[in-house]
Structure formats: structure tokens, C-alpha cells
Length: 289
Image (cartoon, rainbow, N blue to C red; front, side, top):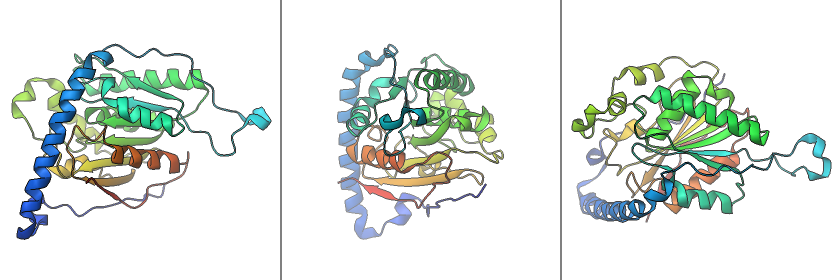
């Protein structure tokens, strides 16, 4: 497999800034923090609505070549699966889901995994069963996944370690600690948090060779993400993966799945992907005013 990687120059944020820009950084941090607090308040209101699994009404099947005139003039868009982060639920994707639906995505499903889940591998197996069910109901052979934070890590484990690359065309991760994060040491009491620490056994599994992996990975990472330590942990760096890292400037961790600029970037990634193609392109960037 030909591998196309988009590398970004990573330096600590303070080293990338000239002294004259420190005031601008302080203002950006204040704005990002204020936005994070506003999003957190809104999400706390929506959280109860997402506790239960969504109702899974029958999804319209994708058109087949035998449909003749009913076939779409362009390649049909596969279903999109949304996977939330740690101690969260599907309500975090209310705005992203609306954006995707308004731009032609009719097949969108969210998966809630239990907050009591103590192993990323178990959650990845659950994700695999969920995706098999979607493919059976829709007739689609592959899906796209958008995973926020821990959700992206669960999806990546499914793709790399459980054969999920046969089902996942594109995996978009938002603020996912691909190499582990060191924030909140006191949270180590939770086994999943320990799995997200640098050097954990699970993360070591993800560094192993993955020859022939067919999934296209796109990681959105923010230079103001307070949960990623170091910041570059939210980027994918693996020799066998078709990976693109997209830097987002001006917003924090909670804003990644709800900000309209990020939603636009996600739509562009999914709309330009083609099943079976090696589509990893140049690393782009999003600047949020």
C-alpha cells in the first residue's frame, strides 16, 4: 500500500510564538475558555436527552446498480457513525448531526457506550457489532466514523486491531489522544484513563504495524486543547496508516464537535473521500475567529 502522510511541525506553543504575539495568545486563550464554558453549560442542559440510545428507525437502503434510473448520478454517501468521548453521550453531536443532515447525509447514527465501560477493547467490539447492524440494515458495505476524544481512540482500535478497516472508509477524530495524554493525573483511578496515558499497553498495540489498512484517517487537533498534553498527541503518526492531521486554531476541546468551522471541515473530508482510494492529502488548517 502506498502511504501518504501529512506531517506538521510540532513545537511547544510558547516556542512557536514571538514575544510580540503573547498578548494575542492571552486574548485567544480567554476567548477559547469563555467558549468552552458556554459550551459546557449548554451541553449540561442537553446531556439528559442523550442518555438513552437513539431510536433506530429503518434507514433507507443505498441505491444499487440494478435500480437503473433511481441510481444517484454520483457515488452514494455511506452512513455516518458518531462516537462520543469519555463520560459523555450522543447529545454532544446535536449540532454536527444537524449540519451533516442539512448537507445531504441521510444515514446518521450515534452509539452510546456505557459510562461504566472499563476497557477500550470492549467498547471497540461493541462498535463493531453496531456497525455490522448498520451495514445489514442499509445495504452499505462501509461506513464513515466521526469520533470525539476517547470515541476516536475506540474507533481507531476497532479499525487497526479488530479488522474494522474492511467496514470503515474514513475515520475522523476530534481531539483524540492518539499517543496518550498526561492531564488530570488523579483520574488514573479509572482504567480507561490509564489506557489513555502515554506508554499504556493499549496505545502500544496501536503503534504496531498495520500493513494494508484500508481506512483513511483524518485527525482534527486544536492548539488550545486543554485535555491534550502534549498537544501533538492528538495527531496520528503511524507509518502504515493513510493519515491527515488538520490543525484548528482558536478553540478548545469541547468546541471541536460543535463548532461550525470544524463541521465544515468534516463535511469536506467525508464528501471528497472515495471508498478504496488512498486519499490522504495535505494537512490543512482551520482558524476560528
